[in-house]
Length: 607
Image 1 (cartoon, rainbow, N blue to C red):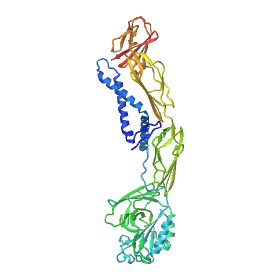
Image 2: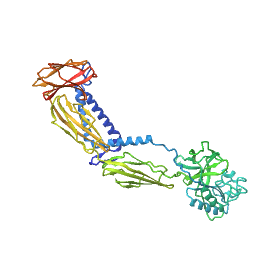
Image 3: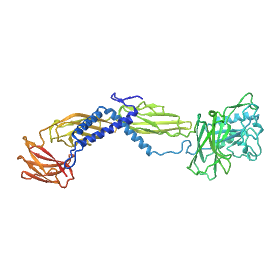
Image 4: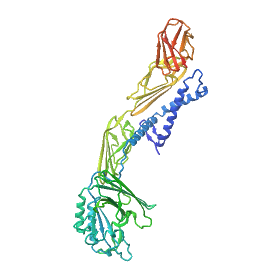
């Protein structure tokens, strides 16, 4: 578990910290901030204060500590923010993606594959010549022609030599009979998709290649896929057969799943010395005439069949074994198509390139994380990253790709397997830009009197799209717009100002401790004496403003706790002004009297 350098040289935390500890810490920081905001809201009338004075002090300390933590670790926070965005992006992709059911079978129309069921025996002198022909057909048609070699026990050619292994099985006996074979039986011989040619299913080796080529040129109404896994500890073989119908099949279909073993050594008539046998039939995982497919066999239907077999005690070398599966038309008795794989392998379909990126908006100098989502079991990957570093990769999961210049960049992925290749190109897919650089301007001195207001203006660079202002002790104390309204301060003290700006490429934070100094001369004072009083306070709606000095009132404004003007009154003559606030909701308000070039403010609670 390591660390990664961020653009400014600070360290990005390990993944488990990034995704667990820091987001949790950030959540607690937000809670502290909200609690601190509640503390600064005084409760009047018959309501009790939420916290004691001592608790207020503790929570305010936590509030400042939280803001300082955000400021000191703003690079990490920026990284985490982008990380959480990418997690959400990936999650949305997952919940909106369409799950494709088939994994091993193609849905595109294909031609038939050739299934050659060979009949052979160790005492057959011409069988080695037949094996040569069969090997040539398989070599010339990889992934298209498949063979299984039966040693039926109802033939004298299959009797083993003394001391040699016995390859005979009773399962193929029903096939090696007349009239099923045709007019006679002989070895070497083979069925080619169990089709009848000239009245016979059983064909001599001179006919195998030509008939197989003819089969493989015909369109198939169904495709087959096959996946096998073998656990050498438990000796369990698991097989998945997939059949996808590209055309309607009205006749019943049956499926066959067989096991064959290679590299079996014994004596062989017609050969000198020990002879190696290939594709030797070992087991059938279905009934004698296959298993009936009960699912729909109409165009667009997918049939998935699962088989399991325990190889314990079989004596087979499973790493030398292969599985063959094929489907038969019950009405005609012909094999429609089939497929075979070595144990532990799966069939390939032409791959489909696909990929995702954690976030396609990337800050300059930050890494974009790409994930291969291609279907069809690719074996090779070629990535091209326009403008990225590195610019290419042949790994399934490429390293983080960094971009040094703002702009739009194209990403291309080509995937390949033995069945073909496919390319996905996403033009102008990655948007690269600068994270914002925070900045703001205070348009007056930070040293003010109680009741005065300050004007702040955003001066951030690189086009932020969101702003979060936090004014400790201010009213309002939190603003989510570029330039906040006037911020009023009604208590003496020193207060922090924090601004967080963000765009699609990241965020930045400015924390300014004790920036604002509010003095204790100002609120409701004029030449050292109280300028006015408000009563009753709290009030049910009607309040009186009594002037204690001969002041000329220019305007009376009522503001909500957020600083919004809710009422404006024109002054009347006399030392007592009566205001009707009955249309306002219950809560805390500020009454501002503008007179002689300054503002005098008092709090009012409507109950």
